[in-house]
Length: 146
Image (tube, rainbow, N blue to C red; front, side):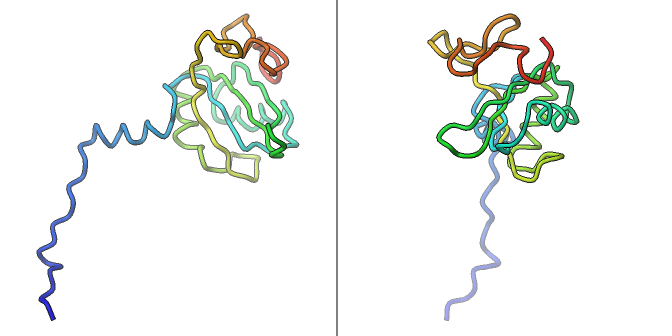
């Protein structure tokens, strides 16, 4: 038998903190924003239920609920919070977890910035989200103010 090398094994060095932070950010897919996209919401969730469940996490400026694509039986929402900090807390703490008032895990990501292509464009005050690309309404619709 060979002598044990357990005592001479050196642990692998940890990457510097700057690289560790980047690895966390890569999971978020989009630049921090006050807009978040929440997926895997229950099919029976209403606009009012969305607002009442998520206003516990921050001041909601507006929100919009969308039916799931492909018959998945789940819904997706876009919520604009009053600050990037509120949205960041949600992305960092609620993604992959069960929000208050719901029974299933949700996904929470920053809303990606989109270019000026058809169906693109962000939801700016007074404009329509997605250029009418199937969302059926503009900002301020759904459960938020305008």
